[in-house]
Image (cartoon, rainbow, N blue to C red):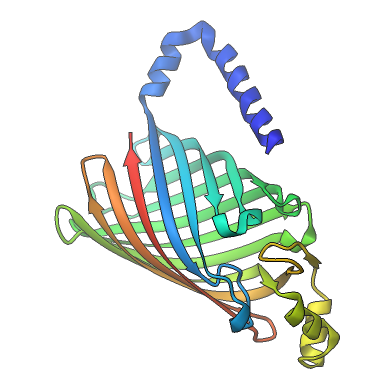
Length: 302
């Protein structure tokens, strides 16, 4: 993680030198900055994304994230937003999966009409560096999303999002090129409680894992020529992420995604949320990798 830390430190020093002669302007700019911190604890079934059920690895994971953003009104219907975010992921039982991601975000929003019920179209872009504990997974991630949303009543809003993600890792095994489409809805059924849900479909590259006792049979023809031919055509390597001899490999797949969340306003600036999420992965030869997770988050806006 030394390279991104040095990059972050250098950026901060350069920014400090640039702002020093104009302290008043810098203070005014910081007044419009919104900072949000979140901590999440998850229990994940099949964290290892493994097809062979007896060898699947379940585990607790923890995430800490910090987001700083600022909005600028360009015109009555146009809003520019820029910021930066950092996310720290930790799985104590499988520490080779740990990583830190950080980078800037930039977006543009257009509102079609006046009032709270006017539709909003939003374009977001992001560039982040993934400083993974495993060297092979380190690299740059690019994201772009297009979202159309609308509030239909004072308590109900919904939207549809299209997202593109590319991760350019040091190893081809961890290279990703994904596209997903999803719909979501939020219902504020009281002053304190909110119910939300989402459903979507993702297509693209997925990183899966297997114990060598299973993988050896797969590439050796023990599960038939179709399985052997496909897995031998995809990038793979022994990285020991989930135990000695465990293989990580890249497959093309379709993923059904859905989630349900219940949030409670603890205070004016703090929200607690319980979320259930499911990702049902099916690769191009019909092999399945189901993953389910339960999580509790605490979000504070400064």
